View (cartoon, one colour):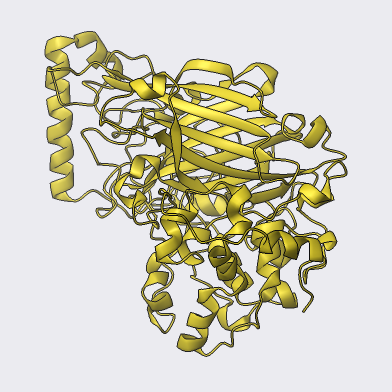
Length: 571
């Protein structure tokens, strides 16, 4: 097996040091011990891909706050106002940001001593007076170390989706929170369905010890808070020239003030000193590669320091998962050192690194204007912006011959659990999938259909995760009905049939889900209470909104829905 180039090996070996005692905390679906107690700053997933419907534009989607149960009121899930949420791009390979996009949030809370409610009537727009709690954000950017410039201030955040009675047309609220800025930028912040799909029973001794604990999407029905940004390639490519310099690296962090007093945001307003408390680049690195004792410390690091931490490098070149699989399932672990994984996670794929994966794909070393002596191995999500958008995306991405998929960036539809499991078992070395693990976790697609235009995410779920109630137009299991009249949504006939909808020339498919007597009675009681309250205080509003579920774009009907294996999405 070929090793890393001499230059790369020297970079990894240089400055080896143990993790210092002043390290802080980090995140990704609760996998780091300290951040699990602070979900508002917990990065859950990061996606970066060439926009399928807008050539020449990069889309970055970053999510926070894992396991948002839709009924988690009365405060639901605001972004932290004493934190900064950051998206970073490195285009010259030195593991330092060349573009920084910073989002900070502000509360507008009108509840006071009057009520505990998030809203006191149906919300039909982001400025509806019935929406008693809302957030706004400021987006600032900095390029090549220049001072930050405000791109937009007081931008509206799409609120937590409190239910069909409160928000009868949530798609309209999503649309109002999707903004176009000067320079062609698009931005969105707000709640969305969690797009990550997997069976988290991997932690029960790797799927039950006999692959019996698979096929259940653990995140079905849950929501996250999302930030999405779309910018031209030229704004992030080295020298603005994507033709000469097509490769970028992307990561995201959350920062808090060094000294924090609960509820006090004065330090943030004054741009006081902040520390990094959460970080995410490639998926699942901190969850299944970094050991427990290093998780908090690793995620306090900036990428330029990654290669100097030998304990973390060792976990990439000799990962734990293959040894576990060998012990439990008898599948031999590939020989070490795993320089193929070093390429995937630390350098990007390029023949210039002289690694075992012989392909030029997504290392900044491929950029013509990069100085090789400044290149530094670092953990980030790397993307070649010149890779053509795939017409028929394959869920296993590069491992299945789809060069636009993970680990060349990450699309919403990439099955990163199965991809990384195969990579850890040596598929990137051999060029062949490991047959014994070919089925993976048997969760191959998100339970909700993604939208076909920015911000691409499915609408937030509503209803109890454990109760089979209404969600995004779909079921409480997490299935949104695509193509329900909401802007930017569409569906294949298979998905429409599964959702109990009809396509052109088709007969209606009977729905099998129905509210139980108790649920129906509860809905009537809630609806009646709302109607009586609004009738006494604002009769006109009641006449406009009508009973729960009567408005246009009504998500109040239950439709069974599951992932559509035949659906082809252009991203």
